[in-house]
Image 1 (cartoon, rainbow over the protein chains, first blue to last red):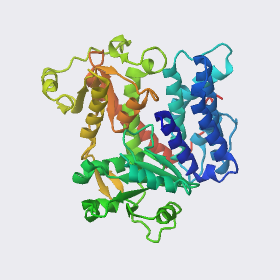
Image 2 (cartoon, each protein chain N blue to C red):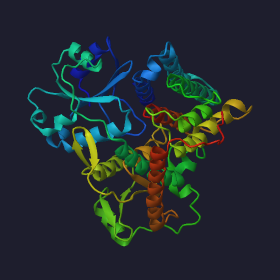
Image 3 (tube, one colour):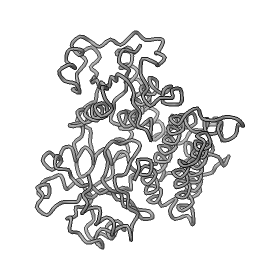
Image 4 (cartoon, one colour):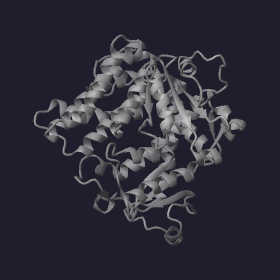
Length: 150
Length: 317
């Protein structure tokens, strides 16, 4: 198993173990499909398309996981978007769930939300190299782990 | 390392459980050997290496870091040979359960399903300990990113990102290694030194080859982390007040599948990365490290004592 595959398999196991997500009908399998497609995108060419596909599938896995997570905990979300979910996780008042620290929300806003929005929403923008995208993917994985850790 | 026999055994489990051999966590160089999961449940299996059997501190460090890095519902189990010495030591009380290698598939599946008849005495890590560990990690990571982030995210096209190519931190003075450190590292390539003026721990890693580089980083991490914890029924208590720690790298060599892995995994155990010969000032970085750690700890205290804040910041998309 390649190292990227082991990383994605680890992420799938952690999502699997989260009751908030695994008890939602269809959520786990949908998120896993996105992780699988992130790995499969390695075979696409040219490089710019491959990198964009990896961002797309990876962010869909993260967005869906956070959406299901906040809904499970009945957290009010003002804007159903990645930034909105992070904001809601920072400001909720549930006693049984810890808040995401503001510093981390700011970090994820800078390292995930902004670069992701740039690539997915602005025509003509392409990642300059694979390091940039692999870093972005790993930031998304860390973000998901931190949320599962709350 | 998982043996072929163990892999065959795990293959049988795959009919009942989700099995991940040699999982890769973004914050850890070494975690559990295997992850077993079911909806709502995850177990990390640890198989002690020969070195860990003769010196269990390494195994306990692996367990401690795993418990800090993974979600709190992770339960940890140790797999032992029938005659293994570890079975007679206090080490095993830090695991949720211990299984012999001959354990039936049904027993292990049952454990993953929470159907164990013997409830474990292993405790959850108290939130203040988690928060303190996290604040140290974030402080170290902040400094490392300040020094290296521009190179990790898309400004270089080569796999090896040399520190001499980076833009220096403009408000610092060059970090010239102190003579005692410079001379010491010739004989001890991966030792950890106490820098007397700032009471910081400093280590250096050179990178003649990629293999030596990774081995050097891992050795420095191992050196620093041993003795940091006292394990009590699975809870890793810090054994002493930890000084700021700086790992001086001659260059930053990213792992191909995760360019930030070295930065994060070293920060997770408290190391901030500095570039050898760059414009970093050890005193300033040391003050910044302590300042950040205190600042993050205070914010976490506020968060836990005052409840939520009314923040109308930008939510982005």
